Structure formats: structure tokens, C-alpha cells
Image 1 (tube, chains in turn green, yellow, red, orange):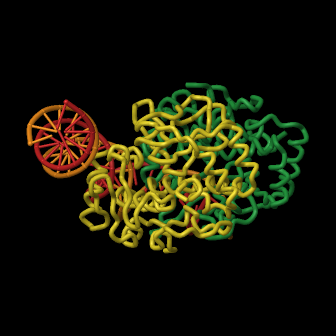
Image 2: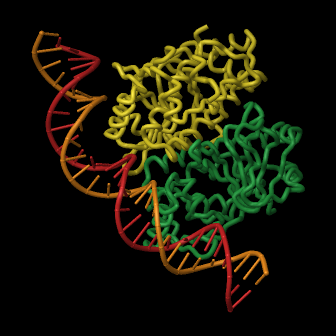
Length: 252
Length: 252
DNA sequence: GTTGCGATATAACATAAGTTAATTTTGACG
DNA sequence: CGTCAAAATTAACTTATGTTATATCGCAAC
């Protein structure tokens, strides 16, 4: 089972084979979307729900002065709010950051999902985790120096990508440019570069081409103040899927 | 009708008199809670849902080094996540910031709410708006200088308090200390003070004791980049309650 | 393999915000 | 009305991050 949506939602509820089959059915026929393509823009009426199958996308807002803030990442298995249609107007953009495979979920498919109590629970879990991530990003920006903030983002990405089988035990593909990391962290690209250099010199991360390796996740977690509790991967209502490096999720 | 929950949710869905009566019934017998009292702590299993009737509360996280980040305000009419119980463990604290009146909502009351389609829609609306506020705070911290960030927070508070009838046409009670504003903005209290001084000198805000007055909301909005769209107060599925100063919500 | 361009890297300098430490104001209480 | 502690204010100095500019790298297209 390599469906990222199934892999992710296993953490939110105990699913049956039928539940999984329904999820897999929904992921049929993803659309190929090039990098830097907006799926939906600020001001639009919310259309279909989008799900990332492969690739990388982000939510972002652009200010009057042209500055951009990325407020969330979408990795495989992540979808935008199931209930956006309740809001009359998008207040932010969602766009791909790399070439991606995207599924459009139609309203009646959404209904099929939320009419299923286990899937409904799993989807609520995903919503609550998305909010928790937003809160943690706020803590990250508000209280941590840029170096720790950078390390924290790397820890989070490693774990989230491991959950859906898109990362190795100590490394993950880094498809974002330093400019995009800067727009995520609220700092300049020059400073992103300085800070990555610092992490490299401290032996906390290694960067080869398009990949980040974390030789000792415990050290980087300590350095960054990363506590994975907020990702709620050890949820009571779920089984505990394997394939996540235990050091990455262990209680501090 | 002075029930803040009803006033708020009118913006999320068209309610019937019965819906309102149910909401009012739920708000019976609030508990008096002194300032600086935690309602729930990080690590706790989520208990009852909490609703603020009067006063002011906040969500916050505390770091190892003692630093605190406030990640959300609760004004009258705001409640914490209806479905927290899905998560096994709180990943943040919720506590009062001033003397408050709080309602504890029991699970069967929560069920009564979400079994009502209009209220369910209104509560989903509130959830989505809470997320939108988090995103806007992230933009605020990441991309705006502290002075604009401060102004933005004042604009948001004025509007949110007006919605529930707790603010005048151009002013609202400021019950937070500068330390608390600092913990919200991710800056030091000294800098909060500098920045408020700047806003005062620019004629953008006036502070008398325990109150913020905004003589020209248009100017402060412009200065702060505040666009109230993210609060989704002009929602298609709702009526448009009066009592909000139109300059505060008007499209930019 | 060369070319070209975006991404990364680095340097030198500028500034917003942090730190520490007084001083003054405010408001609760006797 | 006077006392006191917490909050607000201000000053002087330090530092993290921003700005601008230039140089190098890496990879895709030829």
C-alpha cells in the first residue's frame, strides 16, 4: 500500500479495508501539474477540494508590497480544507512548488468520505493536526532564532515525509529553493543561506544536491526544540504504523 | 440579544430562533474564572469544550527556555476546538488573561450542536475562520515590521470585539499588558512599548487607561496592511448583522 | 563539452529589534 | 490620601537579521 492518503489517515483512525479502498478510489486519475502553478487564488470562490499525491505544494499569501508568506506545506497525502466551500472567498493562494500529481475531489466524493464515521474522524484528525502545525509554525517564527527555526522545519519535513513513505530513515528530498524557505520562515534568502551554513558547520545537517540528510536526528531535535507531539502521530484511535524512524517521534 | 456566541455564529449561517435558543441554553451558568488561570494544559487529555462568555483568554505554548508564544486570542463568543477529543493529548495550553466567564460544554451538548445542520455549518465556519486567523498571524509575524504588526492586531481586535458587541465604534477595552502583546507578536516588551509610542506619535492610535482608540480606522488599516477578508464576516450563508462599523470591514 | 541562467554562496555595510537597567506612571488597597 | 507593586516608559548599548552587490556553482539545453 503506497497510497499517501491512506498512509497518513491510518494515524487518525482505525481504518477498515473498505475505508482504504474508498480512499484509493478517490485518488484515481491524478492530474499532472507543473511547478509554480496556482491551484486556487485569493478571492476565488472555493472550488473542488485538492489533494496532493506526489510532489509539493504550499498555501501562501502575497502582500501589497510583493512580499510572500508561505503558511503551510502540502506533502503527498495532504489535502486542502474539506469544507472551504463554507467560506465565500479564498483568503489565500494554494500552488504547487514542484511538479506534482494532484487529485480534484468532487463534492459528492467529499460527502462519501464524511458520511463514513471512521474516515470522518480521520479527516477531523487531519484538520486538527493542520491547525496544530500552524500554531507550531507561529511558535517557531516568534520564539526561535533562525537557525533553530530552520532545523525545526527540517525535523518536521523529515517526519511528515516518512509518514507517507517519501523519505529515508535520515534524509528527505529537498525540492524547495532557499528563496522559498525564506518565504516560509519570514527571513531573507541571504539569511537562510547563512543559517544552513551554520547547521552544516555544526554537523547537524548535510546537504547534497536536492537532498537534506540529518546524521543525528536527536541532536537536531535538541538544537531546534523540536517535539513531534504536535503532529499527533501516536493517536489513541489509530494503529501505530511502522516505517517511521522511532528516534524521530520518540517523546523527548 | 446580547449572547456573544449567537452574535458571532450569525455570521456563519442563517440561524432560526430555535437555533439561537439552543445556543443560549448552552451558555447558562458560566463559571467565574480569575485572570491567569489555565483552563487546560499541554499534555492533558482534552476534556470539555470551553467557551468564553466574558473576558479574554488565550492559547499559548511555553518553550524549554521559558519563552512563551501566544498563538490565539479568545474573545467572548469564541470556543476551543469542538473535536479536540480526537487528539489524545493537548499540544498547547489555554488560559484566561483577565477575569472571565467561561462555559464548559459537555459532550452530549456538543452532539446536540453538531446534529443541527445550521449550527454545524456555523461551527465549521468558526473553525475555518480560526484557521484563517492563524494564517494571518503568521503573515503578520513573518512579513510585517513590528509597528504594522501591532496595528494589525489592534484592527483585528476592534473588529472581533465589535462583532460580539464588546467594543465601541472606534475603541475597545485593552486588557492585555505589553508583556502579553509581546508574547503574541514574538518581540520584547520594550519593543512593544517603542512601537505603541510610534503609533501614538503618528496619530494612529490613542491609549487611555485600559482602552485603545483608533481615531481613523482607514489610516490604521492602510498602515498595517489590514484586510478583514480573512475574518469572513460577509459570508454568503449568513445574514449581515448590523452593529459593525462599516469602515472596519469594508473591502479595501 | 560549452553555454547560459537560476540557485547558491559570501562579503560589507545598514537597521530593526534585543538586552539591561533605570525611572516614572498607574491603579489597588489600607 | 499615602503606600506599594506592577506596568509602562525611556535610555544606552548589543546583536540578529536585512540590504546590496558580486562571485561561484550546477544543471539543463544545445
